[in-house]
Structure formats: structure tokens, C-alpha cells
Length: 257
Image (cartoon, rainbow, N blue to C red; front, side):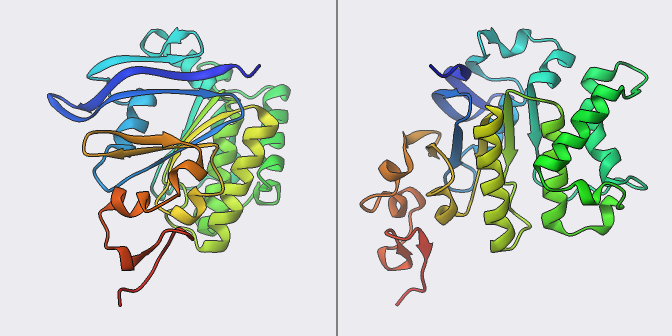
């Protein structure tokens, strides 16, 4: 039986007194991928930031394993949860190997001195993400696709049980989007990592995740397997687009007639 890694109960998310979405109850097991989709402003990034403990929930509970998220010490949380955020980080004068090694800081103590075991985890993480050949390269001088793999290697280096990604394919072309997500699928299965990510690419959302959570108008509109979400004209209604501008069978945008 698979172990439950993440669970939320009647979760409400937002900022201050403004609720963005409410009534979110989900459960995710190890080795499984949950994809968040929905219109802009529906709460995908807010939910991820809440799960990252960057912002507090307005209501409800979040459990990582059998423990409440808000009761896990910071350093311990960094050992069991990792994140890859939207954006283009530009650390100066840092090689890819040094950036990946930052993922070991929750284990190294205040001085940040890597043990041989830590170095082995760094090497293994870069090999798993096919970035070992970039170890000595300046992070700011590699391609966007390579950067995303290096950032994923840094997250894997934390040896997390839960991996959270906010639109990780935003700056990639279609080839690198697919390669990155297939790599994510492989890592989830081989490393028993539970993954939550948001995606705008609906065609890829059909094939990568085990389950999809659809957010709209302040609540969970639908949740299920990809084949349960991508049927009939549900996606068209989720995004409020005209019938002729969306080809529901293929999950692709089409020019209006």
C-alpha cells in the first residue's frame, strides 16, 4: 500500500482577509503526481505557496505524512519538502554544481561544509537529472532547459518526500517541456516522491499526472484522473472559451472560425 505524503482537510487559502479558494481537500501518495489547472487567478500558485508554508492557510489543515505542516521545524521541513518556483534565478559567480549542492544545506549545519556523503548525493542528483556534464558550468550561461534540470537537481538533492513546482515549464520550448515533465514522471516513480505542480499546457496535463485538480471561482471545480477531466466539453467550460476555439479531444487551442 502506498504511503500518504500530503493531505489537506477543508483548506481555505488566500492573503490576509481575502480568500482565494476554499474547501480544498486532497490526498497524495508517494510516487504520484497531482497537476493543478484552472484560469488565471483561480488559486494555483496560492495553493502551492500555502503548501510550501510561504503563506499561512486561512482555514483548515495541511498534513505532511501524519504531522501537521505548521508543527514541523523549518530545517526538518527542508529535508522532506522541496520546491521549484517560477522565474529565472541568476545567482552570480556560481557553478551548476555549487547551486545543486545548496540542496544539502538542511543537512550540513550552519557551516555548510559538505561531507563525502553529501557530495555523493549531489553527484547522484545531477546524474538522475542528466546535468552532471554541467557541474563546472556557470549557471547563468546555460540554456533555460538546462537551468530547469539543474534547479530540479537541487530540489532532488534535498531528498524530499514532497516536491512542489509552480509552472516549471514556463520558459521552455515544447521539446524541453516534454523532456522535463517526463523526467519528473520518472523521478516520482523511481524515488517515490509525491509531486504537485501547476501547468498551463493542457496537452501535457493529459499525459503526465496521475490526478488533476481543477480550480475555478474560489473552489475545487473538479478532481480526478486525466481521462475523467479531459472528456466531453469540461475543459472548455472550465476556462470559459468558445466551443470553436478549443479542440477538447486533443487538449489544444485552435483558431476561431
